[in-house]
Length: 327
Image 1 (cartoon, helix red, strand yellow):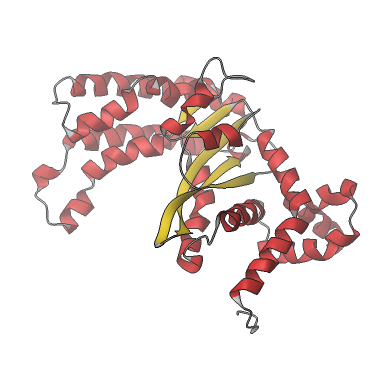
Image 2 (tube, rainbow, N blue to C red):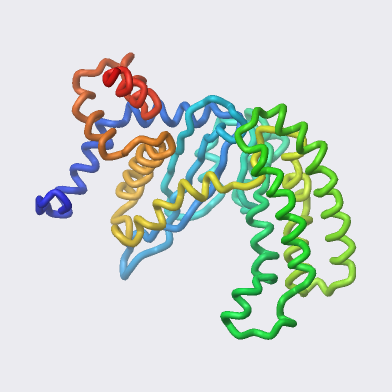
């Protein structure tokens, strides 16, 4: 429509399917690249799926490789999958054969990955401090309380103090973003560890004075439940780990915008095609490549490209090839 061409929905859907088939070799290379990572970000979001009488809630999952925060050198990339539900069988299938560090929220669907007897090995959990901070921030949001004309006593001073303490840890992370893993580890051991240990003692002391039904107590318990504190604090002992899972949330941002345009997936096959195309488009964006220009060029060149040459069309290599042509 943007180009002034009126095409039926069925024709457009057929074109997406044909493109997905043609681009499969590139998708496989991106998938292999993502699953070679020692550390991944994982998350999921809802997608309406057409069903009898309306829609049902399906899911798009993403696994993101982004080594830039610790100067890892590998190009960033994202892998997407579609599923009809949010059962734990899906992440088990997506990451079968992979082991490493998974940065995610505390969703129980990942728990099978963390089992000690998992084959080929245990996946180590690294939880997201943005999720934890958000629970305190909502209880200490002065502007939001003012907007809703709620009295000052509804603002929790304990939550406000928690936000200040957590923000001090985030401040350090902003300083070391992009440094190598060893440098990040040294700064965390020297500066972040005392703050984290102090936060732990303070939160435990405050929680002991509250009812378990207190919203602030619940926010603290979210971090202390089972083995979560270990997963929250593992970043102190590994410079590769990020403090947050924001990389995965950024990858899913386009899905949230897309839902307003395409409204729902018409079938499971449509959902799979959406996940396939998101893997390519988001990976291109992560490498500062215009997805439309890249896909147009790749689709034109693929018929003349041998299997051994496909890697040259990956977003991070395509940019380098484009630069050589300009020079």
